[in-house]
Length: 433
Image: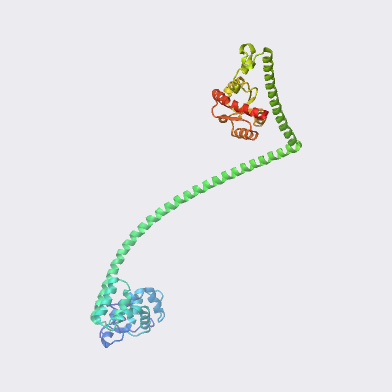
């Protein structure tokens, strides 16, 4: 009588394992295979109707270890520390007959791979079924589904069964070789990962240092801003204090505005008096000249310069070159040229007035000088901006002649004065009429 084993796998038999409740009884290895006892028909084969040596590849390829353990717990009881190998061989042995575990595994396979089962069912002959299997094997995807759909197909003969068995057997060897290769690659990747982690740690440390430096810089800037705010608050307080003092001074002098108005009126009166004095001096000069000409019985132009004195020398100038005692205000100019300006204007019979254009003298004094002047000469390049617009606006408003000069030389002043004396005399003649 042949020796009995609890289960057998492809390539040999295994020693007896501890019996678990619910496992099938040991079987005789010399018994004929179930597939050889069944007549071939059009119905798909059940799991227990397939040759028993194919159960090992089906269970190993189509079910993960954890899934198989979970399914077996539904129909049998076994210790929790049972190894994966014992569970696998127990499931293989249970599939030889129609057991509760075999039915559960069969229903799971049918439900999971129903799409591929319908696709393989279109093959009516063994050759078409072989082509579908080889295509799935070449693509390398859905091999578990193709394995079950082919071996359970009614057109799968023994030659195709053995061919598929050889393909799965070699595929498992290739997977083992690939696993070893993957392990080597995994070890290399682990080493690279450790190097990358080291570099990442260094980068994180550098980033932390940069973050701390920026934090310190931000704190310094915040401190600087606080100090500036304190300084600004102090300046605002000082400004408010000065504004309060100014209000106090204004309130202590209740007639300040009236006094300022009186001061402006006095300045204007002084300017008018200066203008009247200049006009009186000019009239007196003309009166003296007429008196001397009446005494000598000669016209004014024939008086000898040596016998008549300085006034006679002025009288001998051509009428279009004489200022006849008019007030000429020179605004600006270089300090070293002021006396030259004075000499030229007085040589032409005018009275010289001067204001530096706001460089050192106050601009408030320029209003009185402008009111007293008959002619204004503005050195545009040597006065302040405010003085320039003040002179231009007042001369335009009063219609007073104003000469704007770019050059500050005495010769330029003499030419400009000679060119504008006729204009000034014409304006005087129009006023007399």
